[in-house]
Image 1 (cartoon, rainbow, N blue to C red):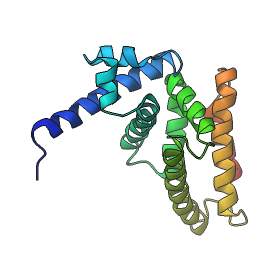
Image 2: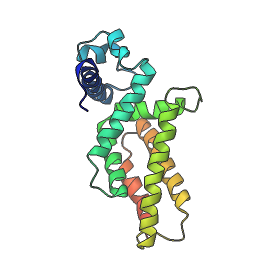
Image 3: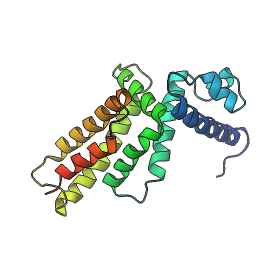
Image 4: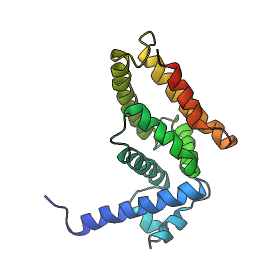
Length: 188
């Protein structure tokens, strides 16, 4: 059944808000992007914008979800490791989104934080895809069979997140080159 009326308009407006927020936060950063600026970009008051998300924190979580949808939509045809590397290569183009991700990830250590469920769900989803890709790679002889798949996942996850933190302090770090080097170590 097609969505009609006010509900459909609300869905469209919410997507418009997220598109504007992705651009603004990506360009200006987590701390420099205000709810007012995002609201102004879509013709709403700050209170009107938050009507669609509830709180500023939930808006920022939804920005990350929208970023993930955008990143994975363009990578549907890529193999897991290539898609992962494509995201790492794209990150320097959206420094504010990298900043938002790392900030909320740290805050999500608090069990009551609104971003906690997002990070737990996202981690399980990415790790499940990685398990599938690693198992296939080991069966096909493209990934060393002597390496524990769970170690590969943990080490790769830690490397990617650690590189983002290091890159924010030193933008000359080539995150993609370091991830490629890690992937090379996995080959027989």
